[in-house]
Image (tube, rainbow, N blue to C red; front, top):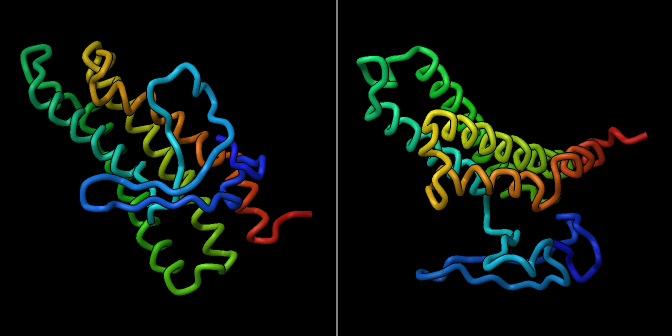
Length: 187
């Protein structure tokens, strides 16, 4: 996505979004959206008060857990295999970490919205939350096996969306550089 200022830097975006009780309302503009001419829907980034990546990761955990409880392999439920349980624990730990950082960052920014170290923490949150989403989406698709690749299934949609979330709203690398600048770690 390119903002009219011809930048992809999240800091330059002034777009906002809010829930009006029925739908999300978005106010802002773009001059270019990558692959926009080949899609029926576009993903845009607006400031809404927090990332949705942790929610997508949670959905992946719930789908994988439901499948693992229902699916029978080698005479028992898939969840009976230690490796499956351990993967669910890894998913939950990452989701919990992302949410804890989200709540901490929101609390700090609410009192000091321009404090550089909290802006750095927000950039780190974006990376942690989207990396968590990517990890959980991959783990869910792996657990669901072929069912995880059925076009239109929730796991398949989140799996595809995870990479977009890592790149959109500024890439992981741009967020790391923003963090370094805010913490004055630049040469």
